[in-house]
Amino acid sequence: MSITPSAGPIPMEDGPARLEAYESMTRQIQAEYQDIARKLEDLRNQNKTSSARFRELLGQKLMLSNELARLKAWRLL
Image 1 (cartoon, rainbow, N blue to C red):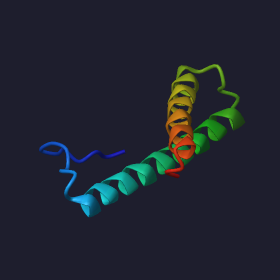
Image 2 (image 1 turned 90 degrees about the vertical axis):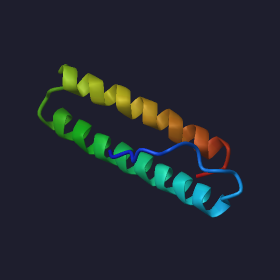
Image 3 (image 1 turned 120 degrees about the horizontal axis):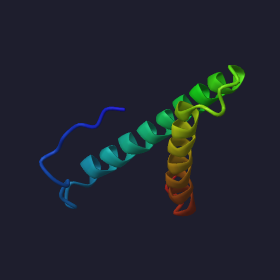
Image 4 (image 1 turned 30 degrees about the vertical axis):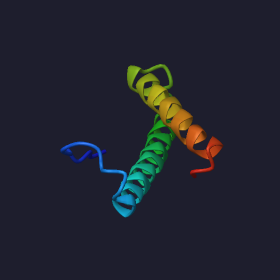
């Protein structure tokens, strides 16, 4: 994941830029979720479900899942 530093929030008056930033963030969250899901599946196939890495990824997946669920609840996704 790569986050571009910014000088501050995009002004409300710049609607298209705000929309593009939101859509970019959403795509990034979805891509990261899918990447973590693949990594977890690989670790499951290696019987490493008790490893610290597996648990770390599982926590990240849960956090991203909650973010996506919130976006869906607000009908933004």
